Image (tube, rainbow, N blue to C red; front, side):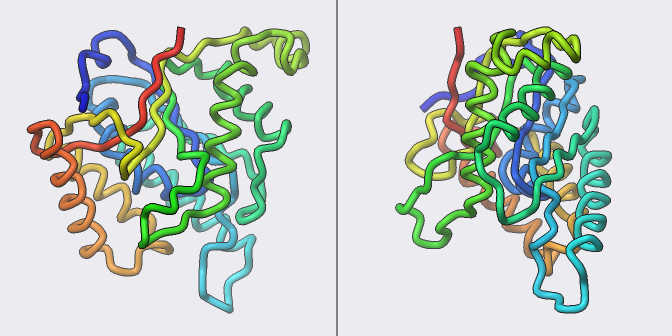
Length: 243
């Protein structure tokens, strides 16, 4: 088991690439709150418009997309994000296509993160309570492929370089959100980071039916992860250091 070993002193820019509004709040917003508290520039990149996640028969996809975008922007303000970028692909239909990879590569070249967090691109059938969302796998695969090699090489998606003037960029570390046996890295958190992450999650009113229960679960889960490394709280990842 490993915990944070000084990454904060080396880097100061991060990006989180997920499929939907609220994905990052559930998976890594404690780490994001910590970075923002320490003065990092953190950017969210949302691949889909979040237009399908409701049981309300009276709301349209267009209305839901607007609601969820506003919720994500509000959550970002709570966390202290630099910005939230919306790629706008239809919720529920995301695939790791070349177009998605190019659009994530563009954001990497614009914002130039040292660390990129994304979702697991593979289905983990060891978790009996959750089989996973296909958009999460697609976002993770597209993000990893954008990090290496698409954002790195100027001749991959050459229009980004020659037409848009975006210099290639090498991400230094990738953290893949991991909650089970695949985790090999635990990022220690302070209670104020967890409290901020809870408030950010609770900004997603359309997706969190019981705000108090969700907040309690967030704190309990992160406290349980903190025990892995002797910290009060933590979040877990599969960490890759790139050359």
